[in-house]
Length: 608
Image 1 (tube, one colour):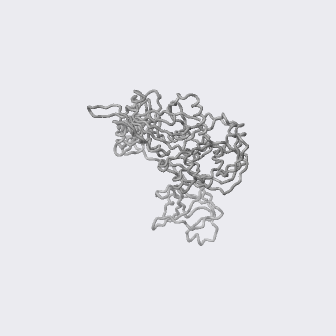
Image 2: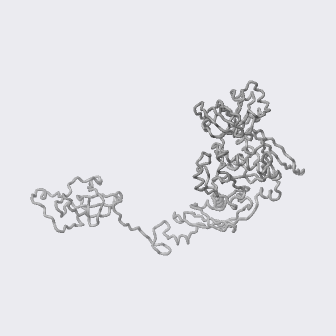
Image 3: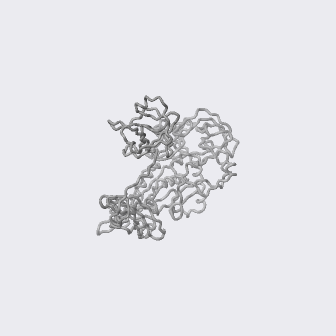
């Protein structure tokens, strides 16, 4: 360690400069013993490579100082220390002195920055190419001169969209990224003259019809000096309805194309699922009106291209058949030979639904490798997934294959019967089929309403069924079936019961009436109120079954968006009592960044 008048707590290296190449090399010498004091002087280094130099005289008046003098080397007498050693600054810079380079961060020496006088006002300032202070430079040069400060924009109050010339309408909320991008693009010609650095909103009253954006720009001015300046652009909103809103306000039935979506089944579970898929992909954003019908939904569009795009989307998410297109002449102008038509696209969805029991036609079973013929539909997308519950073979039917034969279900999910499980014997190990786990087992079951008859059946649910559980299945022992495809198999041994899934109805009785911690979004759909209250109760019960299916099947909710329920407040008593294995939606699957209010989103609503 090296000490001086100013205490130095950092290690330093003693170096000597080579007079030939002017480089510093570590000095190999013996320092005074017993940590004796050495007087050094710290001076600024003029070289750019080192900030500081410690210049150490070779002859110091300190005990046992280092000396290169021959007389001193031959002397045998001890060197008496001087009471007050004195350093001569003039002798510090000979070439034979030792120079010690120190690290750049060891000492901080204040440096004085050069200043000049402003050529206009005469105040001290940091030098710049213009030789003027910032105040005088701004008074001489205004880089925002010629840039627009007031801009008029067209705003549709009905759909909350803005006109992007010439005919494009952009939907954007106040103080959103989309609106800021739209405002900056309106100044695209002005911003070619300057360089945009930053843009941000200035708060204004929502009803003031004013939007203020603060822009920070840069531009090169006198002699290469770059000046930065901020200015505010005020956007004035002028209400002007877009074409679709104008057409709808003039006549709500003024649609150009409609899509009639139908499915010939006795329930609406498929439409509940399609509604969530449509909302996630925003496929019905251009729909003028959505109306619920008896066996489907009607979508109305202001342009046929939007209807065709929607029909194409439906073909990617559901096993739809070939759509039928019809047109109706509305008006005809004989002078310019123009025609106005209304177009209708009819789309039918396959009646095969998830959890349906199907008896495959002989030709279909042969084409699928002698599958079944009694199979279960486990999943429906644009393909139909079929599973043989006795052999765990799985096959896929695309929509073209299905509509080529067009068969129906033997039994649907509305005909499921609840059974009590008494005994379970596992037959095979666990298999992973298409991402789902199955175990073949022999189980002993009986109808919940009738214990007089016991059934010994084989099922694929051996991994989740235990004695004492309840399961839902199809009662083939007492059903009266008139299926033509089933009659074609003369040697087929029909089982008494085919189990479909585990039942949690008894355990859910404890939670009946309690809100769920999650919600679903719903379309702004006109309901069919002419069918009475009985139809409304039926739809509510089917929607409740759909929500239970979402809780039980993670694959079903994979392509859907579930949101946090703000009104849900978990109680400690409920959490302590709910120790059973009732399936539920994990909190990590819920979306928490959605906040809907009447002002922000008047089109969509939330349902539990």
